[in-house]
Length: 246
Image 1: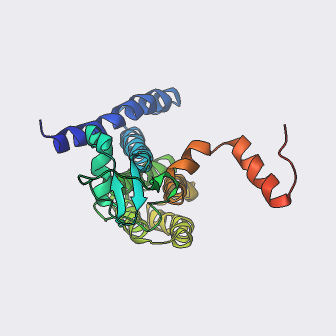
Image 2: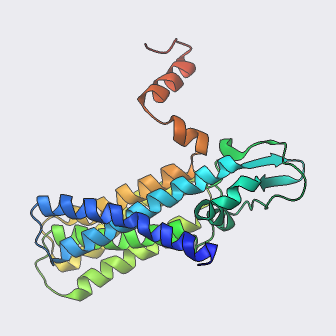
């Protein structure tokens, strides 16, 4: 099997673990098997899992890259990890494959390479579109629509796909957070014709998915490794010039 096909198979396989965990969680919550909420929820968690892992791996791939006068280049050992290496092709700041000479510059792990954006067809952008669409369908189903019909679900899914497209086109963190926040009420409004008892539920999955996506886009791989309560405490201490808490 070609390396590209192997990489895609791995990308899809990571969603299976999230699918199993989602099935256990949603089943325990009492959702009926075969219901719209269950089917859409499973598709959402699988897509979200793929998005989460691919964003993580795209950042991890930068730890195998270094920058010097000739630009950013990958070290030879990245070639043995095609599921990481192929993700770099979708970045706007392209990282070249290593030439004959050694790479001696600083690590790219400190660079937030996702911040400038990526191709619309980047696999994590396709995954966020799927997660947003299925998550909004699940939200509407849980909101208790008073009018039956696939058209209502199709309408909110299309609205979510439009939001995901806007999110993927953003080039700054400010614009990503703006789309994430502003598009939630848009989805709620799209759900209103179905007469849901709790229409706000239609926008909740989008806020979670868009928030995670946007946070990743602002991080470097080093940021990802150091995220946690202790790191947050140290950053606050640095700002206030106080020693970090024990």
